[in-house]
Length: 126
Image 1 (cartoon, rainbow, N blue to C red):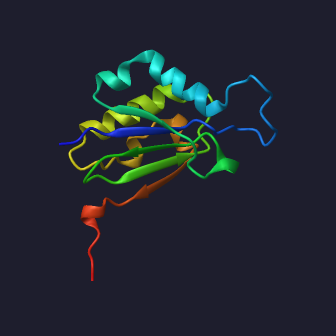
Image 2 (tube, helix red, strand yellow):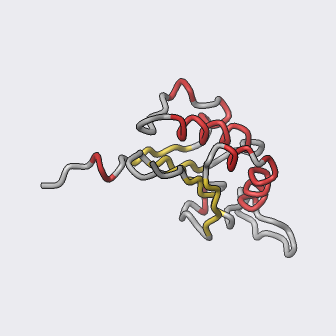
């Protein structure tokens, strides 16, 4: 079984204003918060940054993916969501098929925009 991957868009910024020179984007700050805890890696979740997830008007953005499991794409992530995102990654990794009931999502993440994309293995071909 492959390890889940938590992708964090490192260029995401919650404001439509240009990021002042020398300041870190909100996505980079979220990535650093997750790296600092070490808990995600301890749960065998691969934490990776990506340059862009194409939801620039809805930053911060993250994606949770694994072979043979649905992919979750989350945008409009609120400030202070690192712990909730970490818990979601843990639930996802522990789930046999990657299905996380809406009731189990943290209230912090329920304010985000969430898309669940079926695993390729579950899509029938004609």
